[in-house]
Image (cartoon, rainbow, N blue to C red; front, side, top):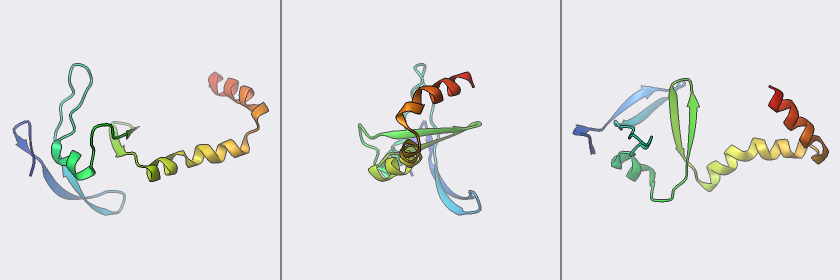
Length: 102
């Protein structure tokens, strides 16, 4: 197990959305500049090397981070590509104004 901040990381099983998963758990600290060091065990497990892109998703007080690969990028941008096919260029300005009013 990896050491971080004097404590050991650990794995445990948990039920997540009706599915049993094994989770790797470790603790990090936010710096004064808002930076977080990803524990080395997790970095190595995910293959997070310098320059690797990650995506952050926030829901209430739960922050998820996902490694971005060409496959995950295509999956994440699919709704945008599909929406683009349904919108005419002449409608863009009107839609932008509607969304800004919300």
